[in-house]
Amino acid sequence: MAGNRDTHRVTCKCALFSPDHKQVLVVDYGKEGYGLPGGHIDAGESPDQAMARELFEELGLNNQTLNHADFMMHQNGKIILGYIGTLDTSTQLRPQIEEMQQAIWVDVDDVRSGKVPVPSYYRLICEYQPS
Image 1 (tube, rainbow, N blue to C red):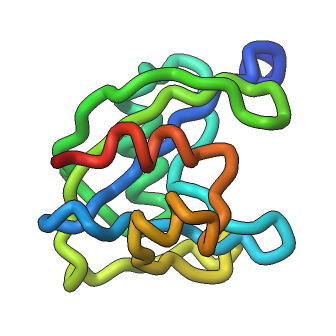
Image 2 (spheres, rainbow, N blue to C red; image 1 turned 60 degrees about the vertical axis):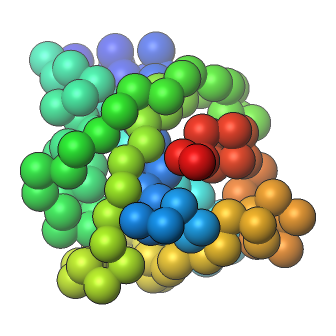
């Protein structure tokens, strides 16, 4: 069944915004740059189940209230199913160091200006930033 994941190349990613909506949580993948938490859908999983699993595995988060945002193409050709949510910046995170260097809060304006480059997820962050 792992072949299905590779064939469809679909992933779920989540833009988690601070309660004032001015910051977004990004993950630092080192040489690969900045991204958003999330990952591939496993065989037999719904996108919502995959997103919940990935947030737990990557950041130690449980029971996040998320909204579907949109789907988009990643620069490498896979389909991204986008989610958005809110998370208090004081929430204790447990970043999965096997996959990322750290998870950090950045200003959405810094993403918008390109100071913090998140090219594959720019649209999800900037167009779906809650008002």
